[in-house]
Image 1 (cartoon, helix red, strand yellow):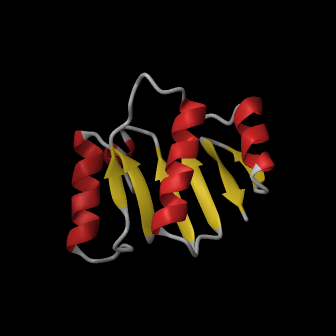
Image 2: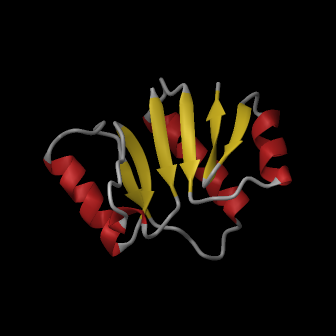
Length: 113
């Protein structure tokens, strides 16, 4: 199962924004509207969620916190696409230390088991 973890507060305002089947989406008015629409159509995994970002938490730590959430709520995940967050060397090292493969991409990165 692929899960999208989106840190882009304006994601829901972008033309063609697609959450996919399972998602964790940072809270903002356009993102909340997109999530509500997805839930209303029942087109998403029941454990998909909107999360509040703590601006005092470094993004590396926030990404790892969301990884823990995904692992808890979507235990069958095979791939997590992190969007709206930059892959740093420190974050990559921490993810690889967990036994995950990491692929950097435009606008974010993907981790796979």
